[in-house]
Image (spheres, rainbow, N blue to C red):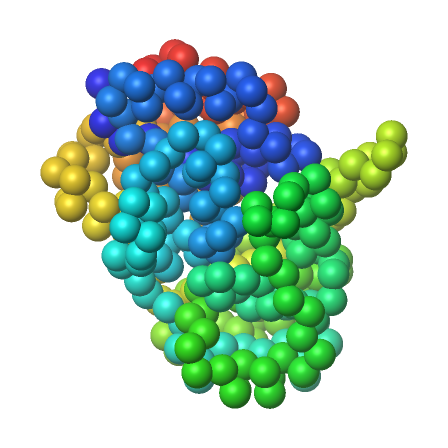
Length: 289
């Protein structure tokens, strides 16, 4: 029996419209009732994950910022963190601004954006379907460098870089890799998200990468959590779809990916479930739990 199941959100637990279906909720709740921990492991900030954890009945822990922190839901506090320093954030912002490339800064509470586009546009459209208390917080900042420079209490999880042009995207990646002490996620395929506008479906496509402190990933955070809980990695199932899920899929007792996942994780998975459009998470939980 698997004692803990770590599940990614976007492209995995959430369907193409950013929703947890009733079928997936029921499968998750059945597993929790049998005594298995369900832990969301996502790149999103705290408040965005907190509302989804409540929705599915996961009441103990979740991982945010791609492993930058573990949040204890019952104590309402961070119990593990590896934040980006303000100095590194400013260094990255300067390169992005000088090269006119789109970027967002994720703090533990909100997403700081220069404009509503790419992944932030998707979150904003998702927010329109939710009551205010359950929305992902997004702040549009006119002068990001000065704003971050003046912040004293802000804790920085990660930075996402987005562009529609692969040539521009690869150029900025080369420059970012010269910065010491950070991890630049090796993503080279296009992200594709569907936004529903009335009866029309709009595809949002862009290249992206995510930047965290060195040695930050979902598995490192999971490893800390399972040690705390006295669980072996053989008793862990990890479900994901993208490069930021690679290490947890590789290291868990059972590494599961969604149908149509990025090739880099497809080749290392133990099991391929249905896509997120077909309740793949529910399918694999019913099969193995």
